Length: 323
Ligand code: ACO
Image: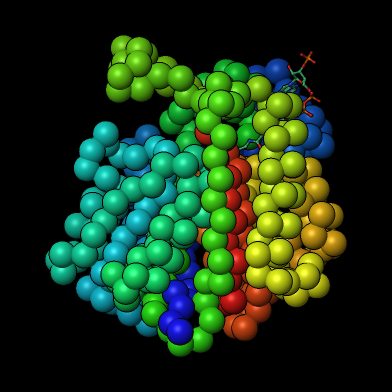
């Protein structure tokens, strides 16, 4: 049997740091409120002329280099993003051009907001299972700051920008073990940017396409859905909690992350946490956290890792893999 195995990871953060203390100067909030409710101390924000593809490119190059490959080796590109550079073409096609890849392999975006990276990994794994690719690049990249109203304290303290990437290759050794995706569209109004190309487009043109969220409802749903999906993932593989080495969760809120860790019987020492420094980077948060932990030596070859994400839709999912 062959597997899709992660052979390289990379990430990139824009230079500009916005601390809670800086937000205290522009909105009615405090560092104490933000940190105690969310675990966030600071976030990165892209420059005015910095696009999602600008963040994706260095993350992708680092992942390809870590895998010991060159860009021309990549025969599938999937970018998870909710904040693409353009309506079309996809960021994946723009990235393929930036990387100077001309082998005709497919390139496309996936939009599942904060669950985007696990959705992209699921799709990528299916390409491997059908033999349709052999060296894939999966990227989560966002300039979420562009769809935030920076005067709305309910949302602007939560989000940040960044990109993370993984290269997956066909291997006889275990890699991705299983993926699990879910959605419940009836809650689409609880977390959304309720304008777009075919709805109130004039608001988009005015630069007023902003994220709206009923935070406490989203919070309750996220805790339940993420707890259930880790149970589902373990049960479908006949595994027990003790079989896992690491949890790499979507980084929305330290209280949601802690609740999921408790459900898995894990201490926070087994959880990769970046929310304090990155905030919620939506589809980028999982690969950013994964890359950090690979590069600092926490996640080691042969270890079993569960990734899980939850976001607007609602859409949520998990990926279990042996690194
Ligand atoms: N500073 C100070 N006060 C604030 C701030 C702020 N930045 N933001 C909100 N408040 C106030 C509100 O106005 C409200 O005041 P009121 O009671 O007078 O109306 C009060 O704080 C709300 O407080 P809490 O109910 O205690 O807030 P809660 O504990 O629910 O925390 C939070 C809010 C952090 C948003 C939380 O609900 C949360 O993390 N929700 C989930 C977010 C999430 O997981 N999103 C998923 C993915 S995102 C995606 O897919 C794009």
